[in-house]
Length: 315
Image 1 (cartoon, one colour):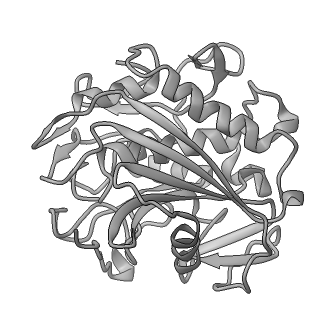
Image 2 (cartoon, helix red, strand yellow):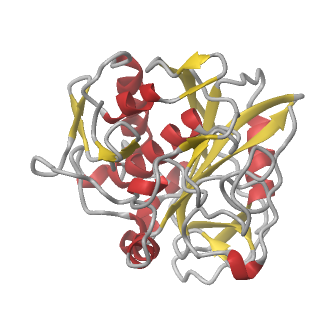
């Protein structure tokens, strides 16, 4: 399975959101951005700025471009870096979330059920998720592979370094698994010069070859490194865990890795994927949550529904 490369001219890029090149996206000119990067979660400022220009939420429905979807999916969490970089219960709360999404498979009452309307040539997506567990790498981070301008970060990791970490940690790659790489507080990243965590994005997903098998991965920065950029302020699982803001952007990338894992399946005429179109749009909340999944509360952004031509919290 080939790796997708999309080269965008600098003039065609709008900071902080997934965009298409001048020509409409196609299976060979996929959704997302250069250097194999697919969907990103824009910072709140970038999303709000783009919303004033039409943003991801308006416009046409998602269109199928012929690529693969994950009709069933698995998730693995990879916690990368010394334990001191993660708040107490940060990892356990995120693991709880993945487990809850899996336990609620088949439900029509949470945001993952919206994905059931999308399909590929083999059939429709089924809300069937499996949490395959967590991996931990507490070794020191490698030397910075990039340079960012965020004062709160002390190291900057390149996308190549994230790919290398996935290849290092994954022993038995599975093509229907998305590997979520979580880094600790104060760790920045850039996938290209000037395209960096906390200034342009809060997370992104893409794919990489591991032992000849193409798998999905996501770069999941520690969102409370810069709360103003990536924290909407909802803490249904307790502010001390610092996990809820990260869970929100995890949900964005998880869902996009299901209905557009390789960047050539579902996105609109401008290159926006389903979660891009609803970035930072939480709909109606009850207190500080809008989802109850397997008995636990979460605050998650909505997902684009072609059926209603708008953002939705459930099918």
